[in-house]
Amino acid sequence: MIRTNNLTVKYGDVHIKFPNINLDYGGQLLIIGKSGSGKTSLLNILGGLMPPETGNVLVNDLDFFSLSRNKRDNFRGQQIGFVFQTPHFIKSLSVNDNLRFSQYMSSKVNQSKIDMLLKKVDILKLKNSKIQNLSEGEKQRISIIRALVNQPSIVFADEPTSALDDDSCFNVVDLLTNLSQENNTTLVIVTHDKRLKDKFSNQINLNDF
Amino acid sequence: MIFKLAWRNITTRPLSSGLSIILLSSSIMVIVLSILTMKQMDSKFKENANKIDLVVGAKGSRLQSVLCNVFHIDYPNGNIQLKDVNFLSKHPFVKNAVPISLGDSYKKHRIIGTNPSFIKQIYNASISKGNIFSKPLEVVIGANVAAKLKLVIGDSFNGSHGIEESIHDHDDFLYHIVGVLNPTGDIIDQLIVTSLESVWQVHPHDYKKGSFDLKTVEEHEHHSHDHVSENYKDNKEITAVLVNYSSPRAKFSIPGIVNQKNSLMGAEPAIEIKQLLDLIEPAVNILYVLSLFIFGLSLFSIVVTLLNSMKDRKYEISMMRVGGASVRLIFISIVLEGFFIGLIGSVSGLLLGHSIMGIMARFLNFKYNYQFSGLVFDKLELVLLLLTILIGMIAAIFPAITAYRLDISKTLKNKI
Image 1 (cartoon, helix red, strand yellow):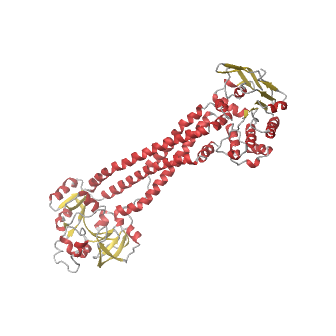
Image 2 (spheres, rainbow over the protein chains, first blue to last red):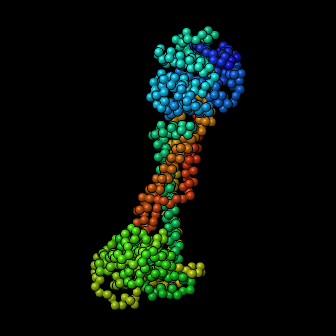
Image 3 (tube, rainbow over the protein chains, first blue to last red):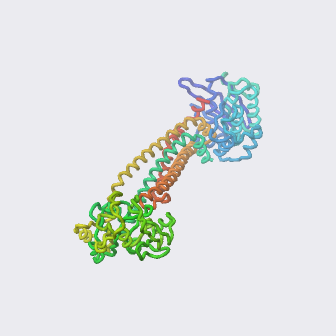
């Protein structure tokens, strides 16, 4: 499903080399690393947001960076969902319209899917709220829904729990893992949050590499 | 969806979008006002000027003679003797030579002493109700006079001496309305028309003085209406003769003949009005320049507003990109914002321009005896509308390019 070969990035004079990743459909992977270990860069490369210095990424046997910019954007919208540490939304749109816009961008508008997911995380009542009226935990849950709303094959989560307290942290991780499993979506989490260590059997530690 | 996004991005920033829209709409308003005023002045003046080929009046200012006798705005130059102009109606090149005699008004509507040709030949007007005047002191009123003053056939009124401000009322002479004219859109709609005899009867002692109405109140009090001069009938005076030519050759001969006479002066409305409009035009051009300046300012404000909101929206634009939005989609959504601002600004500017024209029309109607209106439209306005929307979109291209160039992986790292 997703495979990488000899990825490296360069920061000034520093070269960072990444371990090869090989993950099947529905698989889950936790990548742990302290800050500066290049974990966000790795995620950006995996998600096709940033090209690597060397090496390549194959998603469904397709070389991501051989695509044109527009095709890559389109492929990302169809196949990949993202969850970030600080969720950002389109401020001028409501919760529901933000989710609809995500669907719109990959031309898969499906309101019942949105309602179903909102119901599952118990925030259907916030459907028409403005983004700025939500708590951080609520925003993070909605960003998870947004990542999954197009039924992507992979979800990448970048420090999804670092800003949250213990309760919310485990809530969010459970939500991510459960929803991914239900949708048969591959999940890759990148974090330095040690609380997640025991939650995943499949792990890569960038510090060891 | 993308329309909704662009629209919401405008409405969530009401102050800055509002500023752009207000600037845009006020510049459009000034442009529209100038266009409409100029257009209406031009067409009304020319329409009326073209109805009369030559005004023959007393010596003085040609423009004044035209303004007074054709447009009924200014005061008369003076009077002329009816016997001096008799030759005009006999001249082979002359189709109509209609004498008019001014001096009185009723509630700011001028009472014109003339003959029925004034109505039929010059203005091509017809009687909608009643008859034409046949006896002295019978009047026919224009359509607007009837509507505005709510006068009907059978009503009578005292004329006031003087054209603009009443010096005194002619209490002893009562005008009777015997007819109402159909609306023509011309100046005659604003006039009260009667026979020459009526004016002579009301002003018997004025026949030798320069004009019927240029005297001050004090002067006026020196004579009374009691005595009627015996010889006025032999020296009948009028204010002017309105002439229509029957041949194009008349243009080269008649004015010359008229101007040779010591007591007479011929003025051609078409020429005088062209000169007048040429005088006004630079002033209107200054307005255009001014509004172009505001227009430029408003475009600048659109660029600044959108650029600022780009800074605000750096993260959400990155998020949109991450979520699969192509740069093209984002580019289009920002240009759409420019489109909306241009659309709202120009439509509201056009509406404002027309409403203000409508309000000003009431005042102008009074001042110029014309039916100005806010409901007149010009092709140029459509051009203006499209141009403004186009320029709004062009102004949005610069901010859209900054969004296009945004490095999403860097923005997301700088978080967040």
